[in-house]
Image (cartoon, rainbow, N blue to C red; front, side, top):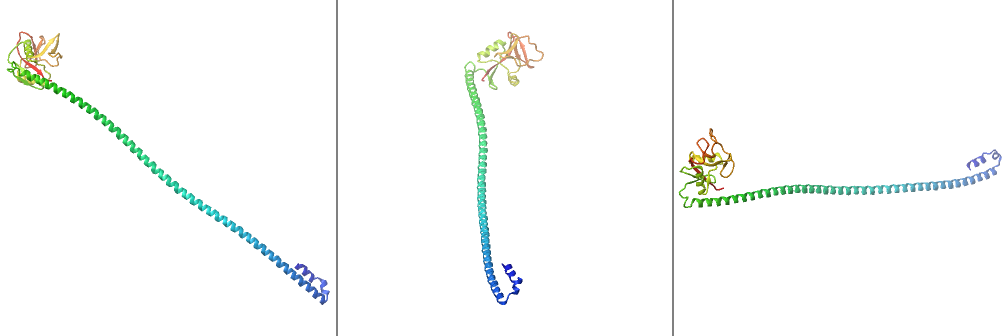
Amino acid sequence: MCEVIYHSVIRPETLNMDRGEREEMTMVIYENLDLVSNDEMMINTERMSTERQRALQHTGRVSVKNRRHRSVQVCLCLLSVLLFTAVIVICVYFNNERKQLTHNYNLTKERKQLLTQNYNLTNEREELLTKYSKILNQNKILTEERDQFKKKSDELIDALTDSHLKSFTWIYYKFSFYYISSEYKSWSDSRRDCEEKGADLLIINNQEEEVFLRTHAGLGIWIGLTKEQGVWKWVDGTTLSGYWAYGYTQNYDCAVMTASGWGNNLCYNVNYKWICERRIL
């Protein structure tokens, strides 16, 4: 529009116009200028409104974006809080589970210890019962032996107090009573005399017994040992477990206790002292 006005003013034809025409032209120009100004103002106004609308739209978009951003931030914060809470809950749960497992492990360990102790106590109880049973059996055996000893002792005492034995002298040594004769008889007669006294000829069980009897009886004493079918046996039927004097032959059947050990001689027509023995056990 400005270019049209400018060109109409500076056209060559306008230079030849008179004053009145120029004034009319000027009026037209001013009117056109007013129109132009109004149009420009309207255009500017429209531009400004458009720009405001754009600004408002932009501001709205920014506000929407900001609100969206805040919503996202709030959601993230809530998620963080929830996640943190979940982590705490899980930690507490696993901590409690760990404590419970530890407690269960300790209980299991204590149970195994108690079972082991119970097993050991059971074994000890069985051993004690076995020992107690053995003690009872030993006690029973000792009681029976005591009763037998008492019975035999009473029998021996009764025998020794009989009127026909009061004149004989008996000695005691380790559960046996011994009668040492002062007479001399053959082996057979000596044994018969012992049997009449409720005893039998001496059976030597060990060297201590022999030494004890040697001290009290002296030497040359018949003992309860004879040879049967070539085998030397004691009067109770057991086989010989003793020894013979050096240099003695075993040509005869009856044994005699000598200074150097055991000898042998005829069972008849040879006389020695003798020892009778009566065992309590």
